[in-house]
Length: 186
Image (tube, rainbow, N blue to C red; front, side, top):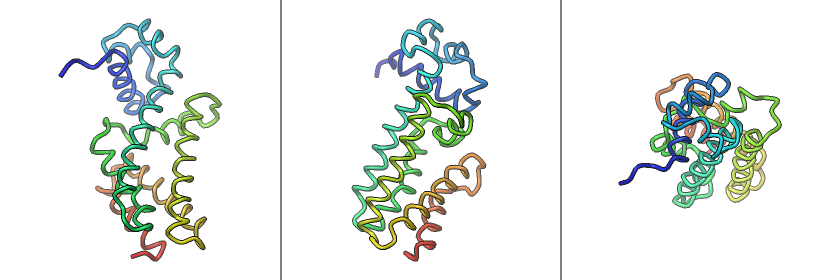
């Protein structure tokens, strides 16, 4: 297998540093050093630090979406489609690059007032979550759509925060169970 291209190497390095150490405290030259490229190369590929953050988030959102879709497609019951988000977290975390926690929550927490391309991707991640949950909830229990979306979103965000805190050991499994109990599905 060949060596990854410069863009992939740079995105991998940026993801490790931005979401291991923090976006604000990670200078572009640190990403360049980690990737083994020049700062000029990074700027030629991404235009700016925000462009680099945007590219990392776009890649992450695409990868997350693919994993989540595969879990939904494997679910046979409408309720299991709703809860598939928790199964997808476990799979995604096992295959994605190591980060402290959710890259989208990390970006939102570091840049709460941002109005730029990375912030738009954070908003897109949230919209994807709620839109998809709404569609699955309508099939699972049309009379309780808002309750299902709100409950699963709250528990899902708790799972993501638990990844940062390191407890419980398997937050996605616990989160799935909690959501099912809260919704009376267990």
